[in-house]
Length: 333
Image (cartoon, rainbow, N blue to C red):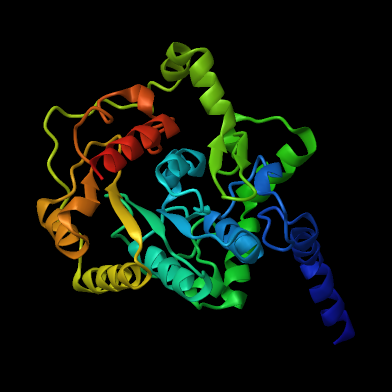
């Protein structure tokens, strides 16, 4: 029995060492608390977790009362630009999550309702390819929800991160980059070699290197990525109807919280590169719930989506687009 036990210990020792390094190195920045998450430049962080931690840490200090909600596309809507259209006492916070769904937005609105003294303003960014998608918690370290916000299991939360960490290709690329600091094509999907800065107060996200590269030589930037920026069809069919009965219920509850707080809210359907318009039936539902004057549809083919220069890649539009959209919707106000 002792020999069997010893063999089991020896066999499990590499895994135990790797798990130990997970808690020591904290590659996904979920073990320790950080004042600034900008320092991790080579592992994609869970934006839901980062946003939640920043909110918990700062809500009492900064008394946030204005919120930008949505997916990672919220990076186009900077709080500094938004402040121009708000009252002087506005204290904005970007409460985003990667691949954010309506259920995630609903959970955050409900949490803000319970924890923030005021909820004066809100920009709610809808993505035609994500917002009305999968509602269940996802089994991925990028998309899994913060347990405090979602009311889910902390044990399962850590299991998901450890599972993805122990993936052989992740470990290979992570430790290779950790020791060499040299990025190779094979690391794509495992190492995020972008320079990203997170604002430590409002939680804005800045893609520093790509923005600078575009400003310095936009022609070269887009030429290098011509395979990413595929040619769109001249005629694109609208998205299929996506808003379900459960979505309608969540939307109505979000609206009731807005009414409760006298929130000045704007619902923005973002200008995605794919140019797929939001289905007219879904648009009508949003307009009926939130009011036609509060819903702004920038999906489909328009002055933003026809210009490749408005995008970092085929998923995220740039802050210049967000600035223009805010000017449009608040000018109408």
